Amino acid sequence: MKLFKTLIIFILGLNILIFLTESILCNFNYPSSHLSIYKFDENIGYKYSQGLYCIDIGPKHVKIDVDEDDIIDRYGEGPAEIIILGDGVIAGLEYEPEKRLGHIIGSTSNKTTVNLSVPGYGTVQQLIAFETWLKHHNVPKYLVILHNLTNDYYDNVQNWEGNRVPTVKETNNGYDYILPRNPNYFGRTIRYLFWSSRSYNLLFKAKPVPQIATSIIPKEQRYVYNEKFEKCAENGNSVLRITSKAIKKLALKYNIKIMWLIWRDYEAEYLSELNGDIALQNISKLTGINLNDLIVVNSIEKDFDQKKWRTDWINSFSRHATEEGLEKISIIISNRMKSL
Image (cartoon, rainbow, N blue to C red):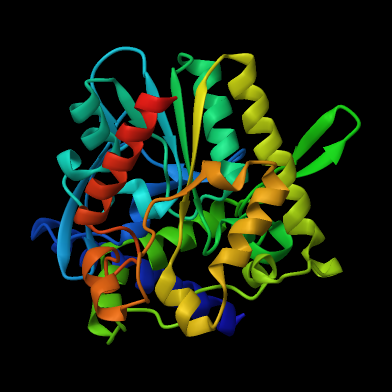
């Protein structure tokens, strides 16, 4: 009984301490953790949460305005003509709104553009995001999909990534979703206190954090870099086949012009001694997309130069595309749209 009372007092004291700390930090406009911009979702696992945030990405304070549709990057008013699907590489969290990919493409093409990219999203979550858009909004003229060769294959499978993400399984009628398993109320409260709060951000910044990851390709993601698939790769293969087929079917049904892009992290491939050309060929086979139609947006013409790569393409604190990289990607997309 005494131990229980001590535990209760400790928990209450901890909550009071966190509340006071949060109040003080908030009063001084101290930024919250970058995780504070997300909320749990029973279908897609997690997504942006409407609101105005100030977060830290590396040494930079960034203001994020998530609108009523849980979107941070869009250009123009009215029905979307261009929809973009991807992950953090092209989400643009690190930059001002006008420097994000959707805004750049919209302003240069004069077409209303919505970027549905969210960090960590694999092909399953991208498919769900697109289906949700079609259900509640309009049918776009163009669909742009960026596949991250570094982790999208891995992000699709619950056995690898964890139950926090959805996945799909094949059925006689096509496919069914296996929904994510989100924390209960208590778990979500703990998540806020330890991950999303300003207090967590303050403690996190007090620790020395390496600026650049050295090897970020997950073990299971490396299956797609093998010349021959092993049996253990079947989960990833199956999910990628199902989702790519579903996306193509939606594009065909609604007469949407679709563009498939590939992002390669040459530094990760180099440090992991992996051959990205083999991975590209495997992605082509699994998705049924002609290899020539898989456009590598950040291809290099000569031997890999690590210093130049970090300068031209990689944001050191997130391993997402740099501002200059997003500009280059937008040019590729704009030119490609003209030929569709």
